[in-house]
Length: 170
Image (cartoon, rainbow, N blue to C red; front, side, top):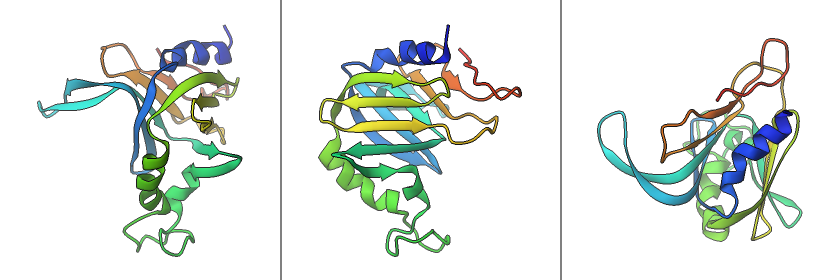
């Protein structure tokens, strides 16, 4: 089975689910989809999370009305100067833009899912918003992962093998 088909089959569980939140942990984008559910974290504390999560450590962007609304490069731009972050600013452009972006675009329901043979993904939402993951390098590190917070199933992970071809760990 092709990588494109494997990705589309795995992500089809997002169809009809709302994007309910987004944020970051260092330079990793996280997206939450679906209804809230309760989990117990590694410290033994209960917390509310979304039904599904997508963690992205590759290039990504949100597109609305033919323009980039938010993108992975915003993580590395200073929120004030809009130049490359030199580490002195407490906020990146991503940090300053997410509240406004979220108030305008979230929730939005996933209408379609498409993938490519390189591990790239396009989610189209009912609002006209598009989300794209673009694999931009040949490094072997993880590019993105998808998982359900409601089950103990393995995470669906897209990395590169030593041969340079993508593989999925399920």
